[in-house]
Length: 424
Ligand SMILES: [Zn+2]
Image (cartoon, rainbow, N blue to C red; front, side):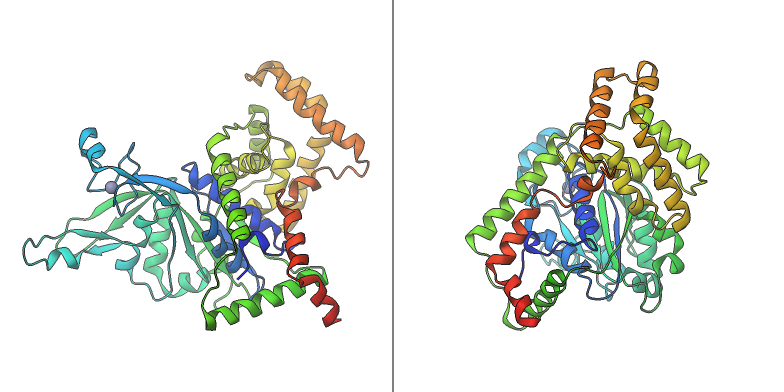
């Protein structure tokens, strides 16, 4: 097994690494960010998404609460009305951010919740109680659905549950059982999904348009463009096959340490970042919404959320237009035509080049955070431009996080590069 940090990053898959990291940080901060990866079989989308389980940061919950109640804001049917002293008496525990999967054979009771048969058949004290399903148990975490296009086709009732979960932030889930009153629980869950639009029954957007639009980001998985990347993917697939027959190997101490460090990094970013979208950028996005006739306001919210996360992951304390540039294709992929997307990208790009002028024009009226901040932002931007005459200054930002260098080293250590020669 390769760790998340050792997976090969290439042009075709790096947006997915970015998307899952943004979503994890957002989840930790209490706002879900829903991600849908679309691509052919073998592009590694599920491997990347599932590997995130290796470095899930910890959250604090009321001890033994299956709904992951935050001790400061209990929300579950058992704890929400308890006085603060009683909550305190229950104690707390640290658990990893939940990462649960909805399988295609799942029944609605497993996904939403059902009668707790254990409690009902307890001979000394039988009681009718609810057993929360996968979704309420994933509160403050992530739900993963593979082949969501197939699920949307075959399980309309689970699709409806997902629509509720993703309809608002936080969303909600209803637990219904004959003989018990309907219970509605708020859930803050990021839904991650994967699908192959070329396989039956086709792209999600055509099966359930509404569900498709609930995803904040859609990441089209591209092909790797170098032989090294291709070889690496083949080797990973081979290793996964072997492990399925031999069981998982243990991580080496170094691998473990690196993952720990990465986990801490993500947790720190989520803890520390308190970026806000500057007002002039909000105005700019609003004008894009109107001028390009974008169908849903969700798109604007998603651009704002994702761009802030993009800046946070780069450990910057200022938003840049390049943050918007980096996330636009992921937010708009499923919402506008490719031609419109290109036009919007152009508009944003133009705005970026004339940025300095704009900063001075807007700063006195809209910049409540102090004009020096904007001046600094644009100075930095123009410095970068001067240094890079191609004008392609957002390129740096679209690359993978700083860990990137490590992967190459790992690849050399593990002999991946050598294998390429063997093959050619
Ligand atoms: Zn609880």
